Image (cartoon, rainbow, N blue to C red; front, side, top):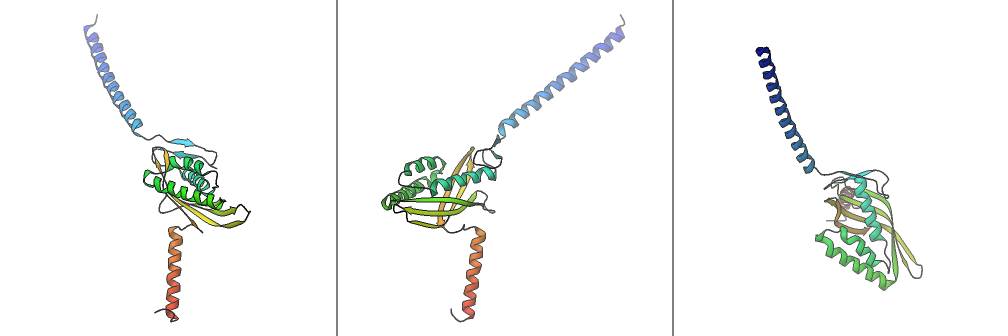
Length: 213
């Protein structure tokens, strides 16, 4: 046996074994890093609800505009279509969506509305025509549409109404943190600024005409 050749081969095998061990340790560290990274990253769920016209997505704290706007549409339908018989159903459907800070006030307002509807024997209806997302506050939505109040004698009063609301995503769940309704078009920051400029312009004109001090 050639002792020199054997020693050389043995040393080579020993060296290869060292590098293989180092490679295994490195791969173990990489796998551990990937596992920690995967567990710390929020899962993104891709969804296509029947009320959405396009695919949306949802993670722990955010959602696509199409997903959140579909909830805004649902909430406006829920609150805008009431009659003497469906008050309990509306409260049951809306309660899980309400933030704790506004839950008592919103449920009390719904009770007041339902009691008034029962006293007056009327039904209210709302048909959304437009959904706007606030450019400055992305979680704020305005649902604008046709509203009507119909009495037992079939007398009907038509108008325009807006439902304004803030919808946040918390732990994959939509949470309603603010909701209000008013007659007329959405009071977006842009429309309020236009209205303010118009009011100031009219006031300036009245001053020039001597109609105001």
